[in-house]
Image (cartoon, rainbow, N blue to C red; front, side, top):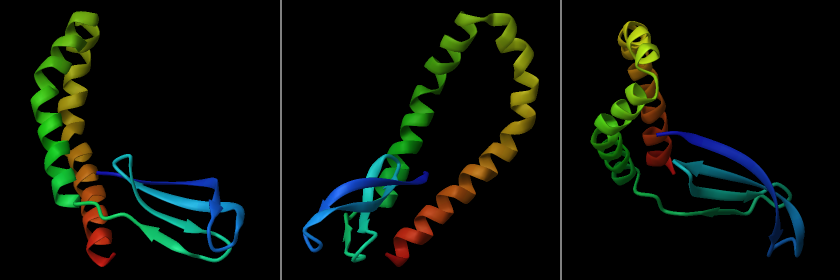
Length: 110
């Protein structure tokens, strides 16, 4: 799971003008929108556990087809890159787990 933020010019109903808003996403779904002028916060309820289960299911269920597609595109690149991918997998997994914990912790406090 991943949190991302962006700024956007949106109309604020409290300011009655177009102002800069900070938009926070969890897995490409809007979690909150905050006006930078008046700090009015609009939050959307996201079931983070459901999002996590959906993301894990999608990653696991599509892995065979993604790997098949990779080796059909370039078998030599696939085979030569496999040892590095196997070695780096624990580090990538730890990074993913830490990002997910951060999202779950933040959503628990919201």
